[in-house]
Length: 151
Length: 151
DNA sequence: CTTGAAAAGATTCTGTA
DNA sequence: TACAGAATCTTTTCAAG
Image 1 (cartoon, rainbow over the protein chains, first blue to last red):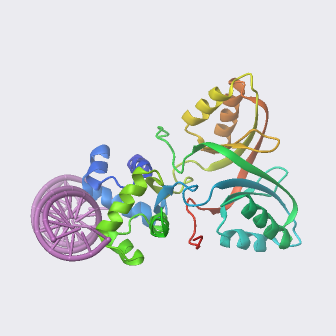
Image 2: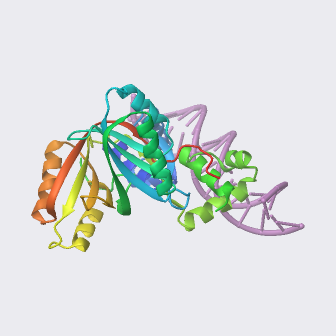
Image 3: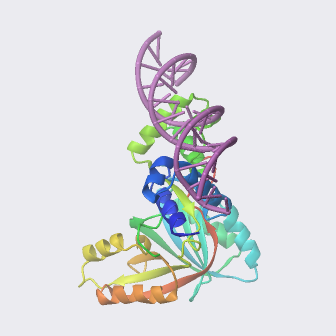
């Protein structure tokens, strides 16, 4: 994981369809050397997957919401984690510091579906307390790290 | 934007390096028909970019935090938006409902850098009030929508 | 949209340091 | 072990129906 690996990863994050020759030119290596590095980055887990960044609204997921959860520990933390891992509406789940135990990012078709989702959480008795923030608009959403020299 | 376009987008989200022939077989089209659909999805903005999902910790961004912001409107909302759009540590910025005006997702090397980032927000007089939640661990983080039939 | 050919690109192999 | 360059093989792109 040297500076060249970071540069290659950044270039791919920006545009994963760049050719190996182009990337090679940018970092000063041959296409085959770049290919070998990408293979290693992928198998070592630095690159988790090649994917596309899609417009969720166009795919029918018009609502993004954040749900702050104070877990009811009677229901069990493992059960909660299993639930969110399997639930297709849960885009993210973070264990966080502060007054809340978990913070969920949810992508869902509409407000009715959001209400149904919160109903599911309640039905499973996961919630001691919760608070939902709906994203009215999104000013920034980057799946990648913009170019910046961090050595 | 029919069902086939959705399926193609989902397949690419899962693995953007699948060949056009493979995708074509999955959706019952020829490789060139799939190619043309992907071209249209890309130019129409449904697919925003081809990218890689990377391990941020391996790239030196070990800390993920969420900053809830009650904006000081004296500083100006446009200035705030411009600041977060340009700041490389800001992964997301959502305008949200509830007691806070904005919610930021920040990726940063360490806690010292997080403190410096909060200092920047203060120096620009953006904060009337704020609250920071640090992600201790992340149970789920999907940049894509898992397969599920939503018609 | 399909097929089939041409072009571009990815992968593998070999030699070198 | 890491690379460059060449050979091969795959994939994409283009033209025609």
